[in-house]
Length: 386
Image (cartoon, rainbow, N blue to C red; front, side, top):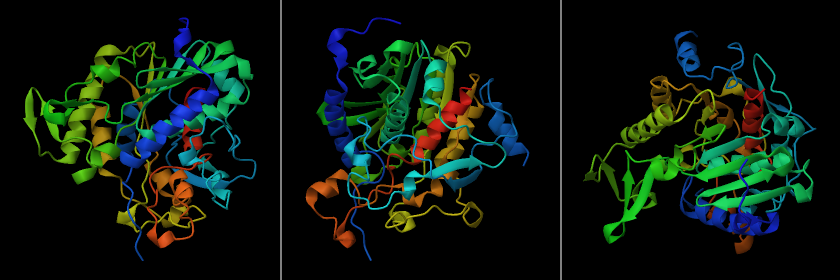
Protein backbone atom coordinates (compact mmCIF):
# COMPACT_ATOMS: atom_id res chain seq x y z
CA UNK A 1 0.00 0.00 0.00
CA UNK A 2 1.34 3.44 -0.90
CA UNK A 3 2.80 5.65 1.84
CA UNK A 4 0.37 8.32 3.02
CA UNK A 5 1.78 11.85 2.70
CA UNK A 6 2.35 13.39 6.10
CA UNK A 7 0.47 16.56 5.19
CA UNK A 8 -2.69 14.56 4.60
CA UNK A 9 -2.77 12.95 8.04
CA UNK A 10 -5.16 14.21 10.68
CA UNK A 11 -5.46 13.13 14.27
CA UNK A 12 -8.88 11.64 15.11
CA UNK A 13 -9.70 14.69 17.23
CA UNK A 14 -8.89 17.20 14.52
CA UNK A 15 -10.76 15.08 12.00
CA UNK A 16 -13.82 14.88 14.22
CA UNK A 17 -14.04 18.65 14.66
CA UNK A 18 -13.62 19.28 10.93
CA UNK A 19 -15.83 16.45 9.77
CA UNK A 20 -18.71 17.25 12.13
CA UNK A 21 -18.78 20.88 10.97
CA UNK A 22 -19.00 19.83 7.32
CA UNK A 23 -21.53 17.15 8.14
CA UNK A 24 -23.85 19.53 9.98
CA UNK A 25 -23.74 22.04 7.13
CA UNK A 26 -24.52 19.29 4.65
CA UNK A 27 -27.46 17.99 6.63
CA UNK A 28 -28.88 21.46 6.96
CA UNK A 29 -28.84 22.36 3.28
CA UNK A 30 -28.70 19.26 1.14
CA UNK A 31 -29.57 15.69 1.96
CA UNK A 32 -32.92 14.25 2.93
CA UNK A 33 -35.88 16.53 3.56
CA UNK A 34 -35.25 20.24 4.13
CA UNK A 35 -36.03 21.52 7.65
CA UNK A 36 -39.78 22.05 7.81
CA UNK A 37 -42.04 23.07 10.62
CA UNK A 38 -44.27 20.39 12.07
CA UNK A 39 -48.00 21.05 12.23
CA UNK A 40 -50.83 19.61 14.45
CA UNK A 41 -41.94 -15.39 -6.34
CA UNK A 42 -40.03 -16.29 -9.20
CA UNK A 43 -39.41 -13.66 -11.91
CA UNK A 44 -38.52 -10.90 -9.49
CA UNK A 45 -36.05 -13.14 -7.67
CA UNK A 46 -34.39 -14.11 -10.95
CA UNK A 47 -34.13 -10.46 -11.94
CA UNK A 48 -32.43 -9.57 -8.66
CA UNK A 49 -29.97 -12.45 -8.66
CA UNK A 50 -28.95 -11.70 -12.25
CA UNK A 51 -26.88 -8.73 -11.13
CA UNK A 52 -25.65 -10.06 -7.80
CA UNK A 53 -21.97 -10.73 -7.17
CA UNK A 54 -20.47 -14.04 -8.21
CA UNK A 55 -19.56 -14.59 -4.56
CA UNK A 56 -23.06 -13.92 -3.32
CA UNK A 57 -24.63 -15.81 -0.40
CA UNK A 58 -27.13 -18.60 -0.96
CA UNK A 59 -30.17 -17.71 -3.06
CA UNK A 60 -32.27 -18.95 -0.15
CA UNK A 61 -30.95 -16.04 1.89
CA UNK A 62 -32.92 -12.91 1.04
CA UNK A 63 -31.38 -10.22 3.22
CA UNK A 64 -34.20 -7.79 2.47
CA UNK A 65 -37.06 -9.83 3.98
CA UNK A 66 -37.14 -10.27 7.72
CA UNK A 67 -37.92 -8.59 11.01
CA UNK A 68 -36.32 -6.44 13.66
CA UNK A 69 -35.55 -8.45 16.81
CA UNK A 70 -34.83 -6.80 20.14
CA UNK A 71 -31.35 -7.78 21.34
CA UNK A 72 -30.17 -6.47 24.69
CA UNK A 73 -26.53 -7.18 23.71
CA UNK A 74 -26.67 -4.39 21.14
CA UNK A 75 -25.42 -1.82 20.19
CA UNK A 76 -22.11 -3.10 18.84
CA UNK A 77 -20.19 0.04 19.82
CA UNK A 78 -20.51 2.85 22.31
CA UNK A 79 -22.31 6.07 21.55
CA UNK A 80 -19.14 7.84 22.68
CA UNK A 81 -17.27 6.67 19.55
CA UNK A 82 -15.11 9.68 18.59
CA UNK A 83 -15.95 9.33 14.89
CA UNK A 84 -19.69 9.93 15.30
CA UNK A 85 -20.88 13.32 14.09
CA UNK A 86 -22.85 15.33 16.61
CA UNK A 87 -25.85 15.60 14.28
CA UNK A 88 -26.54 11.86 14.54
CA UNK A 89 -25.52 11.24 18.15
CA UNK A 90 -29.09 11.24 19.38
CA UNK A 91 -28.30 10.20 22.96
CA UNK A 92 -25.83 13.07 23.29
CA UNK A 93 -28.49 15.39 21.91
CA UNK A 94 -30.92 14.54 24.67
CA UNK A 95 -32.91 11.56 23.41
CA UNK A 96 -34.15 9.93 26.64
CA UNK A 97 -34.72 6.39 25.33
CA UNK A 98 -32.11 3.94 24.00
CA UNK A 99 -34.10 0.96 22.70
CA UNK A 100 -33.65 2.16 19.11
CA UNK A 101 -30.00 1.08 19.47
CA UNK A 102 -30.90 -2.51 20.39
CA UNK A 103 -32.85 -3.81 17.40
CA UNK A 104 -31.08 -6.41 15.25
CA UNK A 105 -32.16 -7.25 11.70
CA UNK A 106 -33.02 -10.92 11.26
CA UNK A 107 -33.61 -12.16 7.68
CA UNK A 108 -36.35 -14.77 7.31
CA UNK A 109 -34.32 -17.66 5.89
CA UNK A 110 -30.85 -17.08 7.30
CA UNK A 111 -29.00 -15.32 10.07
CA UNK A 112 -26.72 -12.35 9.80
CA UNK A 113 -23.56 -13.11 11.79
CA UNK A 114 -22.75 -10.69 14.55
CA UNK A 115 -20.21 -8.17 13.34
CA UNK A 116 -16.71 -9.26 14.35
CA UNK A 117 -14.33 -6.32 14.09
CA UNK A 118 -11.11 -8.34 14.14
CA UNK A 119 -12.39 -10.75 11.51
CA UNK A 120 -13.62 -7.90 9.32
CA UNK A 121 -10.23 -6.21 9.50
CA UNK A 122 -8.52 -9.46 8.61
CA UNK A 123 -10.76 -9.83 5.57
CA UNK A 124 -9.89 -6.35 4.32
CA UNK A 125 -6.18 -6.66 5.08
CA UNK A 126 -4.17 -4.74 2.44
CA UNK A 127 -7.43 -3.60 0.84
CA UNK A 128 -9.41 -0.41 0.35
CA UNK A 129 -13.11 -0.30 1.16
CA UNK A 130 -14.93 2.80 -0.09
CA UNK A 131 -18.48 3.98 0.49
CA UNK A 132 -19.66 6.50 -2.10
CA UNK A 133 -22.73 8.71 -1.98
CA UNK A 134 -24.67 11.18 0.14
CA UNK A 135 -24.94 11.92 3.86
CA UNK A 136 -26.92 8.72 4.47
CA UNK A 137 -23.93 6.81 3.10
CA UNK A 138 -21.65 9.00 5.16
CA UNK A 139 -23.51 7.92 8.30
CA UNK A 140 -22.96 4.31 7.23
CA UNK A 141 -19.25 5.08 6.95
CA UNK A 142 -19.26 6.52 10.47
CA UNK A 143 -21.02 3.38 11.67
CA UNK A 144 -18.47 1.10 9.99
CA UNK A 145 -15.52 3.02 11.40
CA UNK A 146 -17.04 2.88 14.89
CA UNK A 147 -17.60 -0.87 14.52
CA UNK A 148 -13.87 -1.47 14.04
CA UNK A 149 -11.97 1.38 15.68
CA UNK A 150 -12.24 0.18 19.29
CA UNK A 151 -10.10 -2.92 18.61
CA UNK A 152 -7.26 -0.85 17.13
CA UNK A 153 -4.70 0.82 19.43
CA UNK A 154 -4.84 4.60 19.37
CA UNK A 155 -1.41 4.96 17.77
CA UNK A 156 -2.24 2.42 15.04
CA UNK A 157 -5.19 4.25 13.48
CA UNK A 158 -5.43 7.57 11.74
CA UNK A 159 -7.51 9.54 9.28
CA UNK A 160 -6.48 11.19 6.00
CA UNK A 161 -8.35 13.38 3.55
CA UNK A 162 -8.10 13.89 -0.21
CA UNK A 163 -10.54 16.22 -1.96
CA UNK A 164 -14.08 14.94 -1.35
CA UNK A 165 -12.76 11.77 0.33
CA UNK A 166 -11.92 10.89 3.89
CA UNK A 167 -10.22 7.64 4.90
CA UNK A 168 -9.83 5.74 8.17
CA UNK A 169 -6.59 3.72 8.18
CA UNK A 170 -5.94 0.58 10.21
CA UNK A 171 -2.16 0.67 9.99
CA UNK A 172 -1.39 -2.85 11.19
CA UNK A 173 -3.73 -4.26 8.56
CA UNK A 174 -2.61 -1.87 5.80
CA UNK A 175 -6.34 -1.36 5.20
CA UNK A 176 -8.55 1.68 4.78
CA UNK A 177 -12.27 2.38 5.13
CA UNK A 178 -13.08 5.41 3.01
CA UNK A 179 -15.95 7.71 2.15
CA UNK A 180 -16.27 9.63 -1.11
CA UNK A 181 -18.80 12.45 -1.27
CA UNK A 182 -20.79 12.13 -4.51
CA UNK A 183 -24.52 12.37 -3.73
CA UNK A 184 -25.54 12.40 -7.41
CA UNK A 185 -22.63 10.25 -8.65
CA UNK A 186 -22.50 12.38 -11.82
CA UNK A 187 -20.94 15.83 -11.82
CA UNK A 188 -22.58 18.95 -10.43
CA UNK A 189 -20.70 22.12 -11.34
CA UNK A 190 -21.20 25.83 -10.82
CA UNK A 191 -20.56 27.57 -14.13
CA UNK A 192 -21.26 30.91 -15.84
CA UNK A 193 -23.50 33.36 -13.99
CA UNK A 194 -23.26 31.09 -10.95
CA UNK A 195 -25.60 28.57 -12.50
CA UNK A 196 -25.45 25.10 -10.97
CA UNK A 197 -25.42 22.60 -13.82
CA UNK A 198 -26.00 18.88 -13.38
CA UNK A 199 -24.04 17.02 -16.08
CA UNK A 200 -26.02 13.85 -16.65
CA UNK A 201 -23.36 12.27 -18.86
CA UNK A 202 -20.18 13.34 -17.01
CA UNK A 203 -18.73 11.46 -14.04
CA UNK A 204 -14.93 11.34 -14.22
CA UNK A 205 -14.30 14.19 -11.75
CA UNK A 206 -16.00 12.06 -9.10
CA UNK A 207 -15.05 8.62 -10.43
CA UNK A 208 -11.31 9.29 -10.47
CA UNK A 209 -11.35 8.72 -6.71
CA UNK A 210 -12.97 5.27 -7.08
CA UNK A 211 -10.17 3.63 -9.02
CA UNK A 212 -7.89 1.03 -7.42
CA UNK A 213 -10.48 0.28 -4.71
CA UNK A 214 -11.16 -3.32 -3.70
CA UNK A 215 -14.71 -3.00 -2.32
CA UNK A 216 -17.04 -0.23 -3.50
CA UNK A 217 -20.50 0.46 -2.14
CA UNK A 218 -22.62 3.19 -3.76
CA UNK A 219 -25.85 4.98 -3.00
CA UNK A 220 -27.63 7.80 -4.78
CA UNK A 221 -31.32 8.64 -4.58
CA UNK A 222 -32.43 11.32 -2.13
CA UNK A 223 -30.85 14.32 -3.86
CA UNK A 224 -32.60 13.45 -7.11
CA UNK A 225 -35.99 14.08 -5.48
CA UNK A 226 -35.25 17.64 -4.34
CA UNK A 227 -37.37 20.20 -6.12
CA UNK A 228 -37.99 23.94 -6.12
CA UNK A 229 -35.75 25.97 -3.84
CA UNK A 230 -34.36 22.75 -2.36
CA UNK A 231 -33.02 21.54 -5.69
CA UNK A 232 -29.23 21.38 -5.86
CA UNK A 233 -29.05 22.43 -9.52
CA UNK A 234 -30.52 25.06 -11.84
CA UNK A 235 -30.04 23.34 -15.20
CA UNK A 236 -29.34 19.93 -16.70
CA UNK A 237 -26.73 19.29 -19.36
CA UNK A 238 -26.52 16.26 -21.65
CA UNK A 239 -24.52 15.90 -24.87
CA UNK A 240 -23.68 19.61 -24.68
CA UNK A 241 -27.34 20.70 -24.50
CA UNK A 242 -28.73 22.73 -21.59
CA UNK A 243 -32.31 22.31 -20.42
CA UNK A 244 -34.29 23.16 -17.31
CA UNK A 245 -37.21 20.75 -17.12
CA UNK A 246 -36.91 16.99 -16.85
CA UNK A 247 -38.88 14.30 -15.08
CA UNK A 248 -36.89 13.47 -11.89
CA UNK A 249 -37.02 9.72 -12.53
CA UNK A 250 -35.85 10.19 -16.13
CA UNK A 251 -32.95 12.32 -14.87
CA UNK A 252 -32.15 9.70 -12.23
CA UNK A 253 -32.09 6.94 -14.84
CA UNK A 254 -29.77 8.98 -17.07
CA UNK A 255 -27.40 9.66 -14.18
CA UNK A 256 -27.36 6.01 -13.08
CA UNK A 257 -26.78 4.90 -16.67
CA UNK A 258 -23.70 7.12 -16.85
CA UNK A 259 -22.47 5.54 -13.61
CA UNK A 260 -23.19 2.00 -14.85
CA UNK A 261 -21.27 2.57 -18.09
CA UNK A 262 -18.28 3.85 -16.11
CA UNK A 263 -18.31 0.74 -13.90
CA UNK A 264 -18.63 -1.59 -16.90
CA UNK A 265 -15.76 0.08 -18.74
CA UNK A 266 -13.34 0.84 -15.91
CA UNK A 267 -13.59 -1.83 -13.22
CA UNK A 268 -12.45 -5.44 -13.24
CA UNK A 269 -14.72 -7.86 -11.33
CA UNK A 270 -11.68 -10.03 -10.60
CA UNK A 271 -10.19 -7.14 -8.62
CA UNK A 272 -13.14 -5.09 -7.36
CA UNK A 273 -16.43 -6.01 -5.72
CA UNK A 274 -19.25 -3.53 -6.27
CA UNK A 275 -22.44 -3.13 -4.28
CA UNK A 276 -25.24 -0.61 -4.49
CA UNK A 277 -27.36 0.18 -1.45
CA UNK A 278 -30.87 1.35 -2.21
CA UNK A 279 -32.35 4.46 -0.63
CA UNK A 280 -33.52 4.13 2.94
CA UNK A 281 -37.04 5.16 3.93
CA UNK A 282 -37.94 8.70 4.92
CA UNK A 283 -40.83 9.11 7.35
CA UNK A 284 -41.22 12.74 6.42
CA UNK A 285 -44.08 15.15 6.00
CA UNK A 286 -45.68 13.20 3.14
CA UNK A 287 -46.19 10.41 5.65
CA UNK A 288 -47.33 12.61 8.52
CA UNK A 289 -43.95 13.03 10.22
CA UNK A 290 -44.21 9.45 11.47
CA UNK A 291 -40.89 9.53 13.30
CA UNK A 292 -42.02 12.01 15.95
CA UNK A 293 -41.95 10.42 19.44
CA UNK A 294 -41.96 6.89 17.99
CA UNK A 295 -40.18 4.38 20.24
CA UNK A 296 -40.61 1.00 18.51
CA UNK A 297 -40.34 -0.46 15.00
CA UNK A 298 -43.37 -1.46 13.00
CA UNK A 299 -44.21 -5.14 12.69
CA UNK A 300 -43.50 -6.35 9.16
CA UNK A 301 -46.70 -8.39 8.79
CA UNK A 302 -48.81 -5.31 9.39
CA UNK A 303 -46.90 -2.96 7.10
CA UNK A 304 -46.24 -3.35 3.40
CA UNK A 305 -44.77 -0.17 1.88
CA UNK A 306 -44.73 0.32 -1.87
CA UNK A 307 -41.39 0.09 -3.61
CA UNK A 308 -40.06 3.64 -4.16
CA UNK A 309 -39.75 4.82 -7.75
CA UNK A 310 -35.98 5.15 -7.44
CA UNK A 311 -35.68 1.45 -6.60
CA UNK A 312 -37.54 0.45 -9.75
CA UNK A 313 -35.22 2.64 -11.84
CA UNK A 314 -32.16 1.29 -10.05
CA UNK A 315 -33.13 -2.34 -10.65
CA UNK A 316 -33.62 -1.61 -14.35
CA UNK A 317 -30.19 -0.02 -14.72
CA UNK A 318 -28.39 -2.77 -12.78
CA UNK A 319 -30.12 -5.46 -14.82
CA UNK A 320 -28.55 -4.06 -18.02
CA UNK A 321 -24.98 -4.05 -16.70
CA UNK A 322 -22.32 -6.59 -17.60
CA UNK A 323 -20.42 -6.00 -14.34
CA UNK A 324 -21.87 -8.06 -11.43
CA UNK A 325 -23.25 -5.55 -8.90
CA UNK A 326 -24.89 -6.76 -5.68
CA UNK A 327 -28.01 -4.79 -4.77
CA UNK A 328 -28.48 -4.27 -1.03
CA UNK A 329 -32.13 -3.30 -0.81
CA UNK A 330 -32.80 -1.61 2.54
CA UNK A 331 -36.08 0.06 1.55
CA UNK A 332 -38.45 -2.28 3.37
CA UNK A 333 -36.32 -2.92 6.44
CA UNK A 334 -35.76 0.80 6.99
CA UNK A 335 -39.43 1.58 6.38
CA UNK A 336 -40.16 -0.37 9.57
CA UNK A 337 -37.83 1.81 11.66
CA UNK A 338 -39.76 5.01 12.23
CA UNK A 339 -38.18 5.03 15.67
CA UNK A 340 -34.62 5.23 14.34
CA UNK A 341 -34.54 8.83 13.07
CA UNK A 342 -33.07 11.79 14.98
CA UNK A 343 -36.50 13.48 14.94
CA UNK A 344 -36.01 16.51 17.18
CA UNK A 345 -32.82 15.16 18.81
CA UNK A 346 -30.32 16.90 16.58
CA UNK A 347 -27.41 19.15 17.42
CA UNK A 348 -29.15 22.19 15.94
CA UNK A 349 -32.09 21.79 18.29
CA UNK A 350 -29.81 21.40 21.28
CA UNK A 351 -27.97 24.59 20.35
CA UNK A 352 -31.22 26.49 19.88
CA UNK A 353 -32.63 25.32 23.20
CA UNK A 354 -35.95 24.41 21.60
CA UNK A 355 -36.34 20.88 22.93
CA UNK A 356 -39.58 21.63 24.76
CA UNK A 357 -41.63 23.00 21.85
CA UNK A 358 -42.15 20.06 19.46
CA UNK A 359 -45.04 21.65 17.58
CA UNK A 360 -42.65 24.28 16.22
CA UNK A 361 -39.65 22.07 15.51
CA UNK A 362 -38.28 21.06 12.14
CA UNK A 363 -37.81 17.30 12.45
CA UNK A 364 -35.20 15.08 10.84
CA UNK A 365 -37.10 11.99 9.70
CA UNK A 366 -34.62 11.17 6.91
CA UNK A 367 -31.29 10.47 8.58
CA UNK A 368 -30.60 7.83 11.24
CA UNK A 369 -29.42 7.93 14.83
CA UNK A 370 -26.11 6.22 15.57
CA UNK A 371 -25.73 3.63 16.92
CA UNK A 372 -28.75 2.44 14.99
CA UNK A 373 -30.14 1.28 11.66
CA UNK A 374 -26.97 1.78 9.50
CA UNK A 375 -25.17 -0.72 11.74
CA UNK A 376 -27.35 -3.46 10.24
CA UNK A 377 -26.39 -2.38 6.73
CA UNK A 378 -22.76 -2.90 7.73
CA UNK A 379 -23.56 -6.32 9.15
CA UNK A 380 -24.90 -7.09 5.66
CA UNK A 381 -21.63 -5.83 4.17
CA UNK A 382 -19.70 -8.04 6.57
CA UNK A 383 -21.86 -11.03 5.62
CA UNK A 384 -21.25 -10.43 1.91
CA UNK A 385 -17.49 -10.41 2.50
CA UNK A 386 -17.51 -13.77 4.31
